[in-house]
Length: 419
Image (cartoon, rainbow, N blue to C red; front, side, top):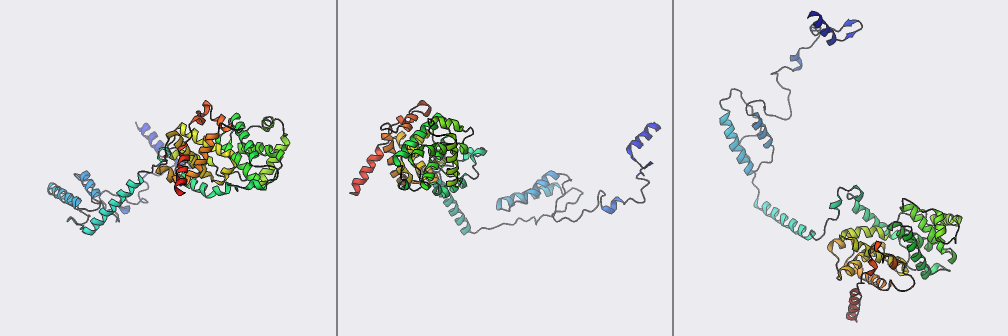
């Protein structure tokens, strides 16, 4: 027993420099008494800025709850309930030997009388808030469903589209820039873009790649005069640049040489790539109609059919030189509006669509009527690339939807009214 106790004492006290550490009894003269640091049971507590109730007495849990409740704002109903509760607790604890020091405010409840004018003004405010909420019910929150989707960027999506609107003018070109070209015209541009739409479809590229390709072509032709024989080279190179910017898997230059029937070499494509980038000052980040289309389709609560018909309308406008006079956001909003009219056979532009697009139905009518005319003639003529693309099952046969001709009739009716 003694040997075991000695071993335990040695294990309990570490040895330093060959001598055991002094025990508590040996250090008695140098150790401060607990009462000096006020660490004894029953010692007076240090002064505290916040007065607290004793919670270790009988019924301490109930008193703690009442102490917490007394910190709430004093109203008539709360004051009455606290008064009755304290009276019952006082009767139950009157025989206790331990005195309770109540450091709370006076037991008498303090009643706060509110003027009738304040009540009336508060009622008026509530009524106004109800009116605002009723008026806002027609505009849906289109981002609430994606609040947990980090890719939707719901926290700053409004700031994103505000930035797009402020900068979309930089992506636009003059609607008469072709007059500066000496060897090419609007019809040649239409043939080039119609061919690029087929190339885009064959390579199975992203939608945003096509819109950026057309934007690069127009911005370059606005700033640089080129001969007719290099127009296709500009188109192929613009698609290469758009693929590098948007795509994950980029087509190799040799594929573009083959798709152009070996009209240009790899060196010529790379040389034109350098010229385009220097002319545009390497500015590839521009808002195209595609970014606005995605937002407006979400505002329209679109299904697959509405999405395909809307993009069909928008790609018809890519071929037409005269549509350059419209901004990208207006083109996207008009495409969604025209597609809704073609599918539902009636004008359907909700408050939510108007709020997020910033365009009313009247502001879209001019552009929308031109889209209806393009839709009506899409299957005829020489440039039918968009119509053939959207006549396939992959694109839901969107081109076979009947045009919204009633929009053209409403134009004739309004014109006759003006006359």
